Length: 106
Image 1 (cartoon, rainbow, N blue to C red):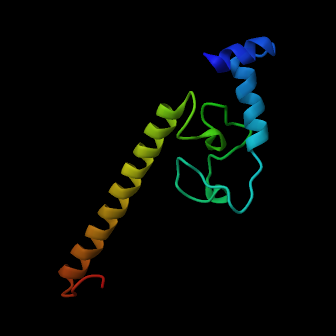
Image 2 (cartoon, rainbow, N blue to C red):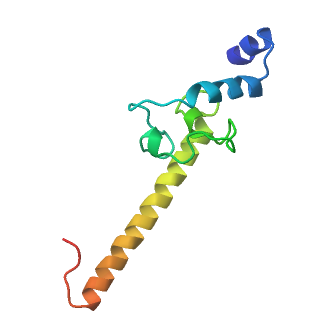
């Protein structure tokens, strides 16, 4: 691919380029948003950190590029788990309200 050719010419393997990208993408501003968690980058626990690698740091996540399928799958899984837990909480609250004669949350 084009990217691999450029990296080869620069004498970098793909993993070295990813580490370089990780370092460059760690910094955030108030406009940075996590593609995977769908939250501001400052609220993402997996944005960047010493234990994270180029394949796990959300600061490298994107809907484009060589790992787009992986990042999109993680995003979809995160949304699914978040919606499951929030709908379970809502139905529990409704059930509790009904059990005590209430109409549930408004």
